[in-house]
Image (cartoon, rainbow, N blue to C red; front, side, top):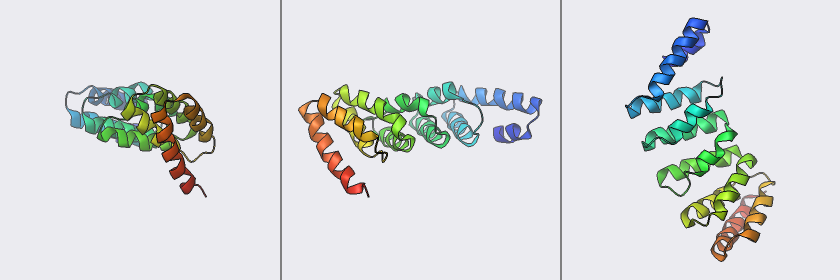
Amino acid sequence: AILVLFAAGDLDALIAAGTELRRVIYSPNPEYRKGAARAISAFKAGKLKKELKLLIDDPDEAVCISAIRAVGNRKTQELAMALGSKLGRGKVSRYAGLTLIELGLPAAEGLFEIILEENHSRSVAAIRTLCRISDNGAEKWIIKAGESGSTITRSALAKESGLRAKRQP
């Protein structure tokens, strides 16, 4: 319904759609919040970064995953660090990692920062994600992480770098 209102294009419909979107984003019902993330994903206009960040941080896993997918669909690179905060945290980590890979090189510096935190599960997830970014510019960050990290970090980087080399044409 929100997308139909947005598509109508007149000012009254736009105001109504914005009001409705705000209502479902802040709804106590996680299904409504998940629907809000999907609507944001489908609607390409507007920034809506604040709203997406709120939904990424939602305590409901399905809402969080829908918001992560919306970030990928909208190519909202400014939310790469918000996605990085989900690495190493169960099922959500997988979706965050895949979306960071889609965002590509702009996500690399944030992944490097996560690797330096030395939180094992988050570092390994960030290493895996960084090494799957196909842009050759990611190698700068991979090398930098190898020079800066612990022995455990360097071991994980060596493994993932080997896999990266096999994936490269």
